[in-house]
Image 1 (cartoon, rainbow, N blue to C red):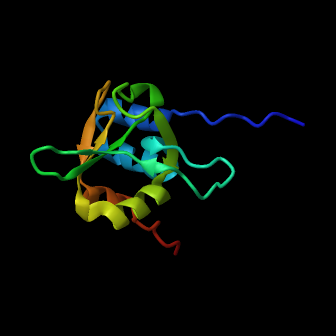
Image 2 (image 1 turned 180 degrees about the vertical axis):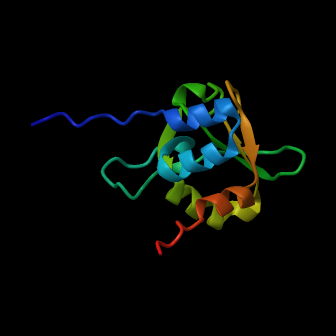
Length: 135
């Protein structure tokens, strides 16, 4: 029996888009690829629909939440919980529709090397764009 390939906890397209500071490329990377999300506790590997509990930063001044996303698990600060998950744009759109009212901002690679910030509303707009209809 062949060994199952382990997922790579890195998104080269997202890393390149963040390095360029190109929000259009970030949107494309989110829509077409995967990215790393910090987890409070991991999902159950025997239940693929159980993806774990997402960890978010609570702003001390406002009690509002910041969702942290990473282009590479190596960019996640060690002070955060040790678990990570891989998610895609469909998951992010669903997550933001569910919890977006409580999330003040989304931070990408917050500790570098190339951080970026976006509002949940801005990300939902780019994630939910429909492909143009063929004529």
